[in-house]
Length: 289
Image (cartoon, rainbow, N blue to C red; front, side, top):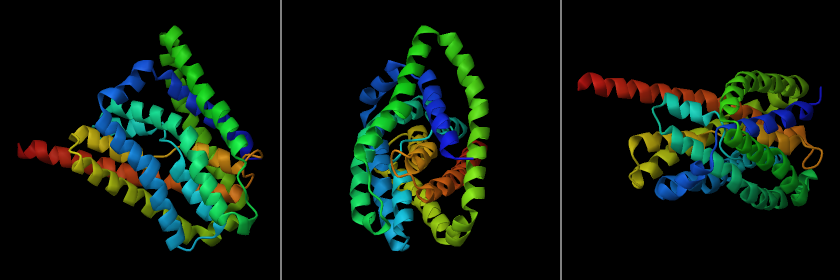
């Protein structure tokens, strides 16, 4: 089974589902809460790719894995961040806005960063970036489904709520199938490089979350906003990274997708532990009071 036949529909459905939960007012929230929006976007669009590049270089990863690690760092927030924010007692409205805004902003930042990274390390691996194809694919698979979902939510809000509940139950199993297919087809490559790449992406998630927390405290964000920013910066849209890596129109190289596969697994583990720590901390405060 060709993974691209799974990941492209999954990405389109994920973005359509995101659109089903969005209204134009959600984007306006960024103007009402600029400090939280700027801290989160800086952490996700500037800090995370910079950390990814530094860690990949520090671990001495092969060029294809360097591209893959930076690629997942350049993607927007994952739709699951809204659920994690709710579990952590975060600001769900802020989470929805940040996911939506990052999905739009990274349409422009991802080609810029990946163009630079590919030019820096891709030549030795015979990899180049067709920027035009990347932009076209992102517009078709990222922006268009979101706009269609928003239109459905505007004209048919009741249907949008039912569709969102149904899609939420089907997308995660589909992602598990995708991860399984990738592992089966590339198990030898994953096994040979699991240590360095897995440690690299796990450190990336931990450092990103810690840095986001420090930035949030520095700018004196409220506790709920701070927790949301930590989750948004750490949780990435792995489906988009896999789609870019595997697409025959862009990199057409499944090896580049391996860091995204590992990141998607580890980010859920790390951020779930963060949620548990936050909830235990909140219970301890309530008990002391």
